[in-house]
Structure formats: C-alpha cells, structure tokens
Image (cartoon, rainbow, N blue to C red; front, side, top):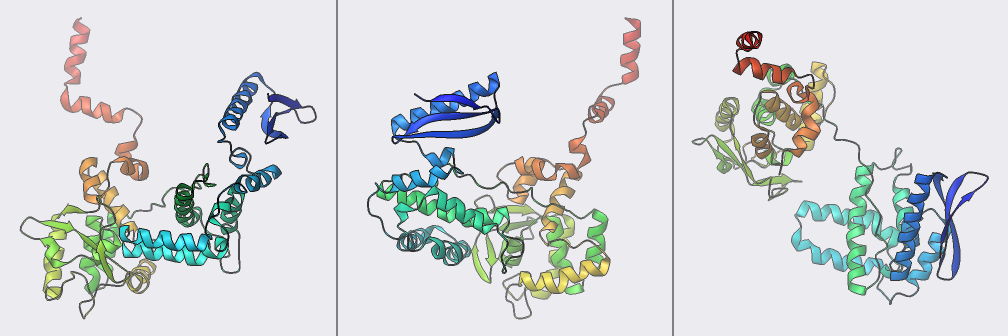
Length: 395
C-alpha cells in the first residue's frame, strides 16, 4: 500500500509506492496543504489501480524520472520479436498511400526519410520506448547549423503525427502497449492573422501590374486558398448562376482533389468578382485554367509570391504579409459587412462557424462589443423609447 508524504526540507509532497518489486519515491511540485494532499492521494489511487490492472506506464506519469527509462526497458523486454522500425514504416506507408492525396504522401515520405527512419530505422519497433520518443521530439526543437531557430511547434507536431500512427499501428498488430500513449501535441501559437483593410485592398488592386489585377481581385473577394485559385478552371466558373465551383486544386504543379469534403463547395460571386472574371476570360479563355502562364500552365505560387506580391507590398510601404492573408481579409470584410457567419463558413469551406469567431472576431468590433450598445441600438430600432418612458411616468 502506497503513501503520500512530505519532504521536510522542501515542504513538497511525494508519493511512495512499489512497482515491479521496486520501492519508488516520486516528488511532486505541490506544497503540503489539505487540498493538495487530496489531489496526490487520488493520483496514487490511480497509479495503484493501473499497477493492479497491468496498464501502468511509469514514463506516462513520471517522464522525467531516472526510473522511467529503466522501467521502459523492462516493459519492452517482454514483448514479442518485432521488425525494425524502417521495415514496418515502409509497409505502413505503402498501405496508406491509397488514402492520401499525392501532396500529403510526399510530405509523409519526406518526414520518414529526413527524420523518422534516420532516428529509429534499425530499432525494433516493439522496443522503442516513450523516453526515446520524447528525446527525439526534444531534439527537433534544438538549434542546429541547418536550423538556427529550431523547428516550430507546428512543424514538430506534423513530424510526430506519422510516428504516432506508425507506433499505434505496430502496437495493434504485434500486441504490445504503444509507447506513444499519453504524449500530447505541443501547444501551437494562435494563427497569425493580419488582414488588410478595405482601403489597403483597393490600393493593392489599383497598383498591381495589369496582368495580375483580376487574380488579386478574385483572391481578396472570394477567400479562395492559393491551391484553389491556382487550380481554378473555366469549366468551374458558372457565369449564368454567378457561382464558382471549387472541385480541385493545384499543388506543386499537380491537379488534386480539394483539401477536405468541406472545401468542395460553391462560392457566390459578388459583382466585383463577376466583372473581374469576365475581364479575365478575354485573356485566358482558350486555356483550361483561369489564371495561368502564357502557355496555359498553372501559376507557380512561389513565383507569384516572390516576383509580384512581396515587391508590390514593399513598393506600397505595406507590412510584409503572406499571400494567405488575402483569405483572412475576405473573412473579416464579410463579417464587418454583417454577412451571416453560417454563410461565410460555407463560402470559406469551414465545417462550422467556430473558426470564424475564434480567429477573426477581434477584427470586427460589432462581434466583440461588451458594453451593451448593440442591444441599445436594437431597442431604439424596434421601440419608441420616449413612449415607454411616458407609460412608465403615468404608472
């Protein structure tokens, strides 16, 4: 039976229990108070219950403890013989290819070749420990000669996702406990949203070179993603209904299906977009793609960004911002105009309105007012306040 005790020199609580015949003492960061004791006692109850059930993982509860790696080795020593990580990862990759778009499979392939196989390649997949996985993740954030800042939390999470899928699938097939259990994704900072004002949009469209004026008009007033506008074909533009049907994208010069089911959508043309596409048709109607090179091939977003977009922003004295900010701009302009959030979400290809309010609300004052003025305006629009006051005085 374990116990909760306090270390006199620090005043911090620690748990004292036995695991695999070894007496274990692990410190907590909690001071000795009644509330904290109850918390630690509940923790100890969970630990002992899992030990009894045979599901306890030392490294899951105490990843920084020197005992964690020791017990991890003891746990994997009882697993069945499994193939090297490299062999299993290649089999897994081949099986998953049918489910993925080409661009995604290229990304996973790069992750395997550049990060996962060099680190875990010859280790038995069933003997990889949680400690090794955590050490690998930590190494990705370290500064190197190749990367002076270390990888970002978002990039690290994308690298770890295939590793998690591989380890969980291997654990399922070879009947061992996945060491990935309990490892959470790193917290990623909020999306960097810096939309343009309507005045800035007008300045950009007025100043951009003529052959890209319609391109940026469509981007700023439809919210299309880069791959969607680059992959837009004339057969997806319905002038009669004034609609744009998003059915495919262009990624790395290849035509692919849309990113998600929600991305497969129909965008309503505003008058300015309708006129821009009519004008663009005069120049590229003989090609498949609406916006294309002189020989009809899809635009290279890298060339557009480096040769047109960034030089234009510098010329106009505007802050350097990603082209994706055109999409953020569309959302904020629609919201500021009072369009229905549900309608905006459908136009943007979002499955719900959650992202609109989470990402864009601070750019639209009407959505964030907390002084009661919005309700005051509602009353003034629908009630005769003076009449109400008169009735009140008479009573």
